[in-house]
Length: 260
Figure 1 (spheres, helix red, strand yellow):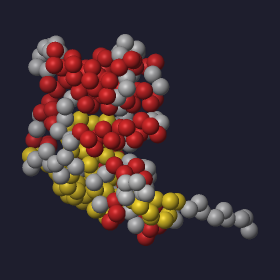
Figure 2 (cartoon, one colour):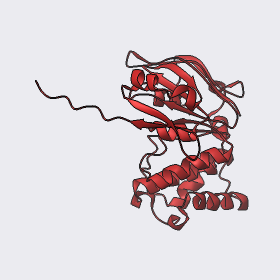
Figure 3 (cartoon, one colour):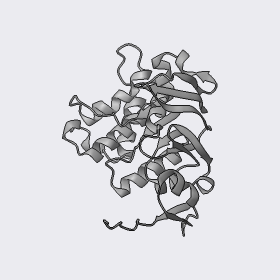
Figure 4 (cartoon, one colour):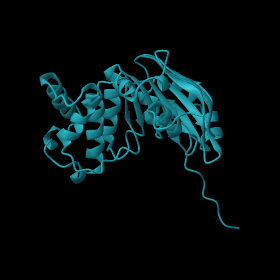
């Protein structure tokens, strides 16, 4: 399923946060959005999972305008893991994961055998099956994040939207989560701050600066020393990973400035 952000512009508090953003996410590909803090990455994603309506432009799913769909229909196609994805009610882990089936359940229908097995698979895949009976509010931030990913998988989306999905995760679970996204075959749009993770996990990277798309292409095409200096204000050496050959960045610490 293809996703297209078609000329998106978003104004918040009288300021333009996203500026005519056009970005294609091809079927089954992982596309990353990167950029400095405040560059509009999360705001753009909020238009995709319908927490915001763009002031200009459209979000298209296989050519269909997302705004013309019912919320239930769009939720059958798109699952989101957001930075605001906290849980205030003390569901058990298995109850929260099962909520991923809500868009597919007419009325008050209970989960069938296949759906219950799907929940068990998702919890096992994310390493939280042993927490099934625990209250979500008892969990650590990393455990809760993995539970929320399991809920998104249970939704069986065709498009997965992930806003900083590796927050709170240790390095093992960061790599495991991004590997899962790549292996799933789902169309994915991911916001990441860690450029090395983005280079390792994404087929295409779009770079935002002050709300505008300034570069798009493969990690090798986009993550150049010149762009890193211009957009992020950092000095880095671009190298090929010795095992995978994918682009990786070696950052240089800035020289401390002495007070005059």
